[in-house]
Image (cartoon, rainbow, N blue to C red):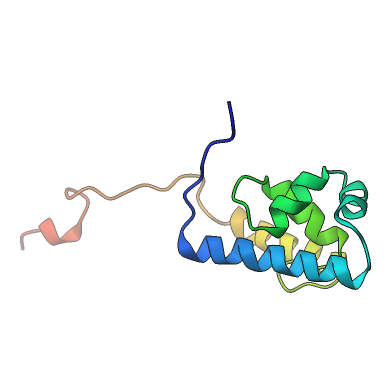
Length: 115
């Protein structure tokens, strides 16, 4: 049984292709083969090739590990400390959100009040 085909939205497919292109360019700038990058990132050479081709079946963890290994800025941050700070800021914001989202029913809406 092979991997399940994932239908990506156009923007997501474009993002996967751009990430793959950035990985490949960064790998070539370092004069690394796909096998060398794979060894450094702890993945197979096939996984590196899939990331570089924008495959939707690669796990997010593997794709991000490969990108970080070649030194790509993740989410605009060039240093790990900056990314960790961004994560802390979002953790603080998320802590303020309710744990669940409730949808209002028509009974809850003020429009049903009759004055």
